[in-house]
Every structure is written in C-alpha cells, then in structure tokens.
Image (cartoon, rainbow over the protein chains, first blue to last red):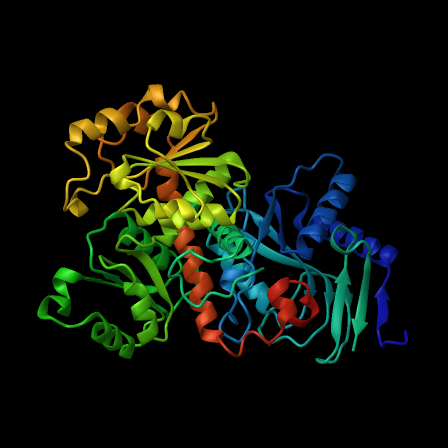
Length: 180
Length: 331
C-alpha cells in the first residue's frame, strides 16, 4: 500500500503469465484456431487482444487469426446520463462476422454494460457462431447477467475503488492498480 | 475533444479545433454506412424534424438518412404542405413544433438568418441546412472532409471557389471554415457576382478563370442559381459559360493532384463541362457520401449535448476527454 492509497495487484510478469494462460485456454476450449477471430474493445482491449493474438501465434506456430476493433460509444446506454459526448473513434471489423467464434477482449469486467454494448455492436455485423469473453481483471459488481469465459485475475473490490489497468502501449508501463 | 456548440447555425467564428472534432467524428461515422445493417441505436427514441422552406433533394435526403441510421425518428415538413402557406410566421411555427418535443430541428429557409431567429425561440438544437445567401455549414464540412481525405491536411492548400459567389451560402461557409483551418481561399467569377466585402473576410478575388484556378489544389464549382438571378448579373448564360465554364483545359492549369468539387445540382455545360464533372479528378460523389457521415456526426454531437446542457459539463470530465481512461469505473 503506497502513501496515496493505491495498491498494485498485477505486475508486468503477472499480466504476461495471465495472457499466455488465457491463450492456452482459448486454444483448448476451441480445439485450435478454426473460425476464431479476436475483437478488442477500445482502447485497452485492443492491446490485450493483440497480445493474446501473438501468444496464440507463438503456441500454434502459424495461426493468422482475423482481428477487429469495436468502439462501443454509439451503443452505450448512458449517453444521456450527464456525460459529455464521448469521442467516437470508430469500429473496424475487417472480416465477415457470420459463422465466426468471436473472442471479445477487454481490460476490466465490472458492471457488464460495456460488454452488452460490444455484443450489440458485433451482432449488427452478422451472426457469429459464438461470442466468448476474455478480460484481464474481473472486479465483480455485475449489473447484467454477463460472465467472462477467460479471466486473468478475479479481484474482489468495493464499488468505490477504481481499478486502473495500465498497458505499455498506451501508458508506458504494465500494471494493474487498485485506487481509492 | 473540443465541442461547445449548442446549435449549428454557421461556421463563422467556429474555432479550428471544433471543426476538427466535427470532421474526426464524421470520419468515424463513415463506416456505419458501409455495413450490411446500416444502423446504430445511438439516437433511439429521439425525434428530428426536417423543416424545409426551399426545394432540396440531396440535403433533405442526406439529413433524413443520417438521422435514420442513428435510429432517430424523422418528420419532414416542407413549406408547400406547412401552415406557412396559411400565413403562420416562422416563430409561431417553431413554437408549435417545439411543443411536440423534438430533439433537433433541421432548417432550410430562403431568408438569411432564419435559423438564428428559430434558435432564439426553441430550446432544442437547430441545424442550419442552408439559410438564404448566408451559410450552409454541413455542406462546407462535407467539402472539408472530402478535401482532407484526398489531400491530407487542409492547411496551406489553395482552394479556388468558382461561380456565383454573390448568392452562395456554400461559398461563405467554406470561406470561414477554410480560413480557420489555414487554407488560402480564392473566389473566382464575373465582377457582378464577386462582392468586394468578401475580400475583407480574407479571400482573394479573381475575375478571370485562368488566373483563379492556376496552381490550385482544389477547385470548387458553384451552381449558377437561376432562381436567385432577379437582376442581370451577366448578359447571357452563353456568355457566362464561355468565360467561366470549367473545362479540361482550365483544369490543366491547376496542380496535378487537383480535385474538383461541386455542391450540386449540376448545370452541365453551364458552369462545368460533363468531361470535368465525370472526370477522374471529380470527387462530387464522394461529397454526397461524406454528407451523410457529416450529418450523422452533427446530430450525434448536438442532440446528446442538448440533453446534458448545464449538468454535463462538470460531470466526469475525464470521461469526456478519453472515454475509456477510467475503464475500471465503467466497464
């Protein structure tokens, strides 16, 4: 516990181990990479999905898995809840969604509302065979009936606490920290 | 991200970073129109009224498609079918429409300033779809988006705007926005259609087509507005065409990468030759495609903003700046 009340719960090594384990679990559950596609939720989900993609490629040797990005802004259920307009950065799904096993990737699973929005966005592109969810951290406090298929770390938190996932690609450092 | 507008009445005085926000947002919306299911639920349950006191196919259709792709309900009111034909004033019409609780009103009107008048009488956002000879901001924004897509940065580019500048709201909106973004603007046309005041707003004035388009990065043609030609601004259409019709020879004077824009509708053979309008440098159809994305972006920015006006600004500014920064709090 540091002086400002923040506490590190995952360091770079722990994050990397969790992602490699998730990559193995994905391959085991799906019996390989057939029809598999990775979709990262903006913005940290993209970096995590890229890392999982690399880990799968290392395990399987070749494996060119289709990759997409989903921006949930236009599907949020809180657009009229007193926020300023969130920046729309765009969705990019460069492969046909129909029939794919979509692996949705995000950094933190909390209320489940982001995942609900991401699934709504995905099914607007077609009818996937399945949608699975991988998250680095599950911090509880669900408000919707949603669960993750692959979890890096289960993290019991109070609602008031903030879980900060920092990744080298965006923040210059790999760590998961609880604040407040 | 910078966006503080309550309405979109015009682009005069709008800062460069706000214009950039509108264009960036529009760029993100383009992808939706490429999908099989061209619809997102963003404005579900919102109502957009298209109030058109002037004929329009492209702009009205574009606004209507934009609203529908955001899942808003749209209602079209045109002057011929409205109570305006029974003598109701614009302000009274506005108050009556407002009583039905729309979430945005898109207005086209033959009088300059009509949108500003409406904005004083209603509380919902007003989007100017062209007011008289004043402004047509969404047209200028879709022009900018098209230029940015084809040539990259707008700053430092030379844009020649050719034709009936006097009556053109497209020219005025483009002048304000292009100057804000750091481009050079030339207005080109016969002296009778080239008001000298526009020189004071920062445009170069050219009465000769060849000097006007020489070394230009962009040539934007304006329609000769026959419906607004009360007096004789030039002797005959034939004579105008001989001096100012954009032909392939004139295009060759511009930079090799030149692109040709036209807000439509085209008067083929009058202000633009068919060879140019359909030529490889013509981006006229890109403009139409981009128009839908620009209007989606403006509806998104203004309608969601209106709901939160007053309360929204102070609340959770970190999320406004970077929506996913506090993922732990929102995921």
